[in-house]
Every structure is written in structure tokens, then in C-alpha cells.
Amino acid sequence: MKSSMRRIAVLLVILAMMCSLFGCAESGTTDEPAASNPTPSDTTPPNADNGSHDDQEPGDTGSADGNGDEFVIGISVSYSGATAQYGLEAINGLDMALEYINANGGFNGAKGVKATLYDSKGSTEEAVKSAQKLTQNEKCNAVIASQVSSEVLASGNVYNDAKVFTVGMGTSATWMQQGWEYLIRSSVNYDFVAPNAVEMMKEMGLTKIAMMHDQSEASVSFKDTVVSICEEEGIDIIITESCEVEDTDMTSQCTRIINAGPQAVFISMSGNDIGYFVKQMRQFGYTGTFFDKESYYAAAVDIAGEENSNYIFFANPYVTYASIDDCDIPNMREFLENYVAAYGELPSTEIAYRAWDSAMVIWEASKLAGSNDGDAMLAVVPQIQIEGLGGPMDYSNNDGEPYHNVRRFVYVDGKNVDWATWMADGGYDAYKEATGNEY
Image (cartoon, rainbow, N blue to C red):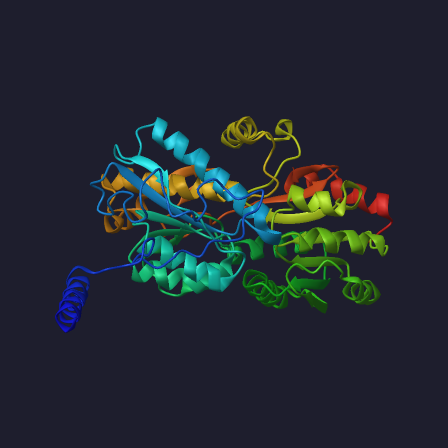
């Protein structure tokens, strides 16, 4: 009996030693950290955060030195929650761009593919996590960073430290002032928009303005720039009101603004907030003009109502359209026709345009460099001069900024009308007659 027990004990020791040497593990475990999966939604894109990429494992999607068969572009956007529409349209724009690029030679012969999608959920913390996953797990050749400037500001150092060629879609001046070598912009810097907006106000004889802004990074930065320029130009900001991002009830702010009696209202807000604010101002009896930080999106018109959306002025490279027939810009019209063919509707925001432009900038960099290497592409950025959806994109100023001049528009009768033409044709006088307003 004792002999048998000794044999069993010996066998147990041997088994323990074998486990130690060869690594016994439970089935289904892995040394790789688990990805953080967002809550599924009806609008979740097909390759979102699922740990796969065209039947490949994360991190096996091509070669960052440009020698692989694929050129991998990551995109960091929110595609759930209140800002889902923006992110989904950005993804659509990138998909369209990759289809076009691949049909026209790809990235120096390499097929352009989209990296696994990670939902930033409208959160700076999640944007950082997305950046970490895109740089550590996906081996991206390039990344398109969020249209939300606070997300780019929070995550930019991750892309820069990883030395990934990154094109940001945000519009705030702030994140481009951080000295990040590997980040450039594909959209407009709103510090370039502000002087155009103030110039319109001056030519319309406006001297007393109300300011409404939300607390997003881009909105606060833009508001500060406009206030500074107005002070220089002798335009008084007689009242300033604010709200949180995604607020829908601005009753008290509207009441105080109307009671202050401004000649016009300047809106420095992001997302759907604009539509709710305009609607409530009109409901409270305001018949005057608005100046908008952004182009007045079709999505904002849907919220405010067509009847409330007249006389909104803005300066921007892009506008959205209620109908393709309203667009007379050849390359934009072609883009819209292809977008409708692919997705059955027009984009309701400009974010699809920004994503398309971003991909085209990356493509042009790879062609000029003759390489898909990030450093080689970065070196030729000052040579990039292409026709973007918002007009000529010219990086020759060597500041990483493509749009230094912007168009000026007024939204009236359901259309974005050229502001200079509207003024010359007596539009401002017609507005005064229709509303009884002096300004």
C-alpha cells in the first residue's frame, strides 16, 4: 500500500513538473489584452471593434514600412450615442474614398483597407483608448483622427509618440499648436473662419452682438477668437450665454439674449445644439440674423425647422445640401451622387466630406513620396496641392493646414447662397423689409 502511494506521489510530481515546463493553460485564455467592445447598436458598422480585419488578426494587417500588400487606415470617431450620425458618415466617407483609391492604383500598388473600428463614444477617454488600439494592435500606415477637437487634443500625443502619420478632422486651433510632428489637419482651422465671419458683420453694419456657445473645446476656442477680433473691430459683445454640449432646453438663455436686444446672435456651438437653439430663439420671437461657427447642417435644419432657418450666415469650405440639384460644384456633386448611390441618402453633416478629404490627402502623400512609409509621407506634405471637396487644399504654408481661405454663405429659403452675391442682389435689404428689422 505504501509502495503504491509513493508511486502515485511520484507521478503527481512528474505531472506538476511537466505543466511548469510546457505551460498548462485553461482553454480559451490568451496573453493578449481583451478589446473593449462597445454596446451593439443597429447602426454599428460591420467591422467595429470585433478583433478582426478582413479575416486577419489585429496587428497582421499589412506593413507600416509600406512593403505589405495592404495600406491600413485607422479612423477614430464616435458611432454611438448622440454623435453617432457624425461618426457613421465619416466611416461612409472613408469607405467611398478607399473604393475610389483602390480602383485607381491603390497606395503605390497596395490595397487600401480600413482598420478595425473602435468607438470613441464621444469621450476623450475613449478616444485615447481608440488611439492606443489603433497604434498598438492595428499597425496602421495612417490614421484619420476625430472631428471632435477635444478628442484629437486628448489622443494626439499617442499617435505622435507612435510616429503614425495622422490627419485630424477637428477644427479647433488648439491641437495643432501642440508641436506634434506627425499630425496635420484635413479640415479648416476655425481661427481662419473667425475673421471672415466678423468681416461679414462689419459689412452689414452690425455693432452689437450676442454670443451663445457650448462648452466643447472647439466652441470655446472659437468664441474666444471671435470676441478678440470683435474687440479690435469695434463690435460689442453685449451678452454671452452658454450651455453644455447636447443641451436641448435653452429657454433661459434665449430669454436673456432676446431681452438684451442684440442686432445679431453669434453661435459657437457644435452638433445638434445649434438646431435646438435656433428653433427656441425663433419660438421666443427672435426674427434677426444668426452667425454660425460651422456650416448650417441639414441635420440642424431638420431640428430647427425650415421655417426657422432663414438668415443664418457662416464661412466654411463645406455646405450640406437638401438636394443634389442645389450643388453646382462639380467634384462635390459627383461625391454626393456616389454617396446617395451607396447609402440611399445625402449626408446630413459635413463630416463625410472631411473623411474623404483626409483619405485623399493621405493618398496624395503616398504618391508624392513614392512610398507608404510614414516619415516619407510626412516629408512631402508641404508639396500637397489637391482639389478637395471644400476647394483647393494647399499645404505649401508648411503649417499642416490645407484651407486658408473659406467661402461665405447665407442660408435662406432652404438653400446655402453665396453671401457676396446675396448682398449684391439686394438680399439684405429684402430681409429688412420682410422682418421689419433695422439690422
